[in-house]
Each structure stands twice: as structure tokens, then as C-alpha cells.
Length: 413
Image (cartoon, rainbow, N blue to C red):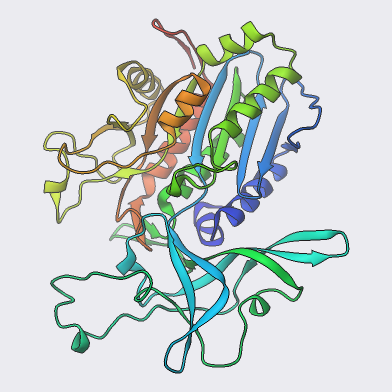
């Protein structure tokens, strides 16, 4: 599966996880279940899922040191509120709410679909089914004749202006998605237009969900292609866009997986502490490129560019410090991977990632990295094609490296 197929078919975190597990299984990774008695082998490759929307894959090297990459499977969208429809002057609309901090106007007048999971009744109880509507939806904007100031300022109300048209006929939501009786569901309205390359030399990749599925894809490809010296772990978690405060989104899921690995390998408490203290986390989440039309929004000295290489992200909201930044720069220099430093403009709000929360939960040194992109949280984002390959090489190098130490660092690629 190439990056564009992955982006186009990973409508929600559930579909992302399904695609991820398919890629891992085809590469020989063995599925495990949390709570089972794991039997692990050196050189073995495994994965475990939670809630159908998060996946952690790991490959067991000879050294009891953890190399961990974290990214997130969710992206901003609209979450459907139940199955009731809103009657709106001859048309029924879906009742939705914002999921994450999407750039709302970018979803207007665009091809959309309903996607997610439904829980259906079976003889054994409840079964989960992934669904994608076989029909398109649209959220029509208000004509310029009725909103003459729209080109000067546009304020959208999420309860009024961003509800998709569903039907003029007698059609029910759940019945339009599944044949079985649906008890409840987690459904989202998502962009469905295919991703595409742009630029005179096809140097840009545009589409929905680049944040953060480019990181998920690079992480999965990296662990599939890696034969690690240490214990390589790739965690792709749900719900980062809404704070990660769920059992499938919280870094505690990674902690539980690392504990299970330690138990299965008969590691003592001291050996487990050594594995985390000497290990490292890379929080892989996209960053902002300098916008050609608005360079004033970027730091005056540190400006990241599309196709400029891996971005090392610095801010008090990020886990990066001088030590972890130096480790990553040394690693990338030796691997021949271009990199660039990102610092947020001091008077502009900075977002958060999984970095600090994961570092706190695991007690591990950590660095926030990503690729540079434009139009973050839009229904159509833009990044550099070369940067995706650079990130994959970065993660392959990291997962295959033996990085140890706390103050003085030993690095073996």
C-alpha cells in the first residue's frame, strides 16, 4: 500500500488501524491480545490493538532498551451526533459537532463521506463493523449575494453552518450504512476526495489527513523494514486531536505494552528501568512550514520549508530539549538525512503533541519531530513529497539504532 492509497482509504482512526494491521500482518507481524500470557522471541515481530482505533507494533532485538515512536491515527473532522436528522426547509441534514480543531471553511462545498464504525446486534451479542457511505455529502456555503462580507471575514457556527445535506427523501442514517440492526455508532463526516500531487514538478502532496497519517505511514514502513538492535516500538494512537484522554489515546497504553514486553522477556524491575532510562521516544507529528503568503506568522530566524527535511520541533509544549535534539541531529547527520529546526513565533499559539505526555508516562527522554506542511487541519493539506521519504529513513535509522545513556550518549547505528 503506497502513501496515497493509505491516505485515501484511512477515513477515520478505525480505518487507519485496519490498514495498519493489514500492513503489519502481511509483513509477518503476529497479532497479540492485551491480557494474554505473551510468549515472545528475540527477533520476533508483534502487534496489539485497542478499541479498533489504536495499534502498537514492536520488534524484539537483542538489547533490552526501548526505542519508541509515537504518532496519532485521528484527524480533525465532524462527529455525527446520534442518528436523528434535522429537518431544514425541505431537506434533512446530519446533526454534527466538531472533532478537533478543524479549519471549518475548508470543509464547505467539498466532497465528503460518512465513515466510522457501527455496533450491530448478533446472536452472540454485539459486533463492530467498519463503514463508509457509498454516497457523497456536501456542506453548501452561503452564496455571496446573501453574505456580502464573506470575502472580508467569515465566521461559521458549528451548529448552523457546517451540517451536511443528507437527503430529501425518507431515508434513515444507520440503514443507509449497514444491513444489520445498529445499536449505536461512532461516525464521522470526512473529506473523501483523492489525494494528489501538485507543483510543476509534482513536488507537493495534497490531501486530507496528512496530519498525522504521513507520520503513521512512515512509522509503519520503518518498523516493517527494520531489524533492530534494541526493542523497537511503534505506537499509533487515537484521540490526540481531542487531548488523548481515552484508554486508546492515552500514553498509558504504550506503558502497558512495554510492561507486558518486559514480563514476557523475564526482565527484572531494574532491567525494565534500564530499558526506559537508556531508551528514547520520538513523537512524530507534523509541523508548520513557513507560508509564502504569510511569512510573518513564522519565527523571524527559524523557518521550515517544504522538502527541507525532517523538522525538529522546539517549544515548551514539546518534549524536545538540547540533549534529545542533539541525539537526533547526530543520528540524522550520520544517516545523511536533511533536517531543519522549528521554533514557534513567540506571540503565536503553539499546539501540543504526544511528546510531553509520553515522556512523562514512560519516564523516557524524548524529542518531537515531524515533516513541514501547510494548511494544517484543513480538509486539504499540503506537504513535500521528498519529506515523507526523509521521515521514513529517519525512523528506520532510529528504530535500528542502539542509543544508550542519560547524560553522555552512546549511539550505534
